[in-house]
Amino acid sequence: MDEQVPVEVLASIVGRPGARLVSCHAEPVIGGSGAATGDISRLTGVARLGTADVPFRVVRKTVRPVTTGRHAPYAGNPEHWAYWRREPLAYASGILPGGPGLAAPRCHGIVGDAIYLAEVSGSGESAAVAARRLGEWQATAAVPEAGWLARDQLGQRIAASHLDWGQVSADPRMVALWRRRAELRGELERVPRVLVHGDFSAGNLIAADDQTTIVLDWATLGTGPVGADLASLALSTRGDFLREYLAGLNGQFPQPAVEVGYRATLALTGASRVHWMLSQGIRPPAGYVELVVSQAP
Image 1 (cartoon, helix red, strand yellow):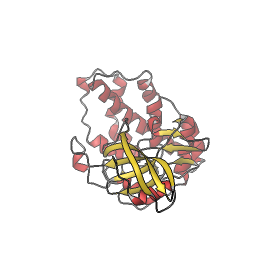
Image 2: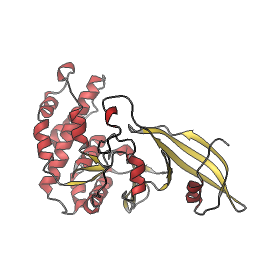
Image 3: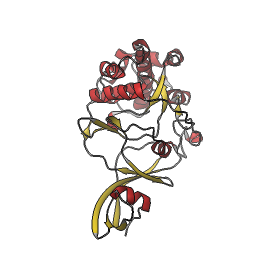
Image 4: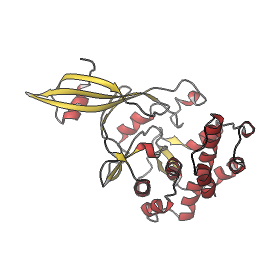
């Protein structure tokens, strides 16, 4: 037997206690991972329940503290975006969305540093649909009193980013936006706070069915300005879905405040990412700079 599956996790997978593991093997899941991700594996196996053999598949995601880089000193800070224990805590908390609309993958259990999740299949979600469902979730989700929620991820990233624009050949408009960072952060501080995913980008959004968008990777769950998650979606798709987002919010927050949260976050995040791309010898995708400039406050 290549792999073990905890008894309580196996009971959740098959839907009844008393199952016995017959066989199980693991294969790595290739893809992006967050700072606190140890590894992600797909477990495929057979459980025996009574006399019946039940095949199963489950995803095991392990977490571990980041030990290198500029954010490593904050891996143990529960309010920092890189806090390594946040995702297991999020799945155990019951505050993640469960659909219809947005939904986290079903969690079959948390054992030690491992999270066991239902495998999610489907195509990438339409950005317009995701934006509307994001608004619906944030308009209705209460912000809980949880000390492990990330606080001000954008501010934490900016504080650790010392960008030398003289070392890259950047569009002057990107440099000008970055120089406004104190002003834009000041505007963001006056925007209402909501629960935020923290990386609401196209690669984390799966269309499970007509009613549900599955959202992956909750390691940066926290509080942030309304509109901030929409900025992540816009930058990952190079599209503007403010109208759909506002429709989902359904008037819960004043539109001018939503626009500030969206546009200021997009401007600062977009400018810093352009600097990173250029510093790595990567040309920004077509339309990226123009999107950032056109949506900036």
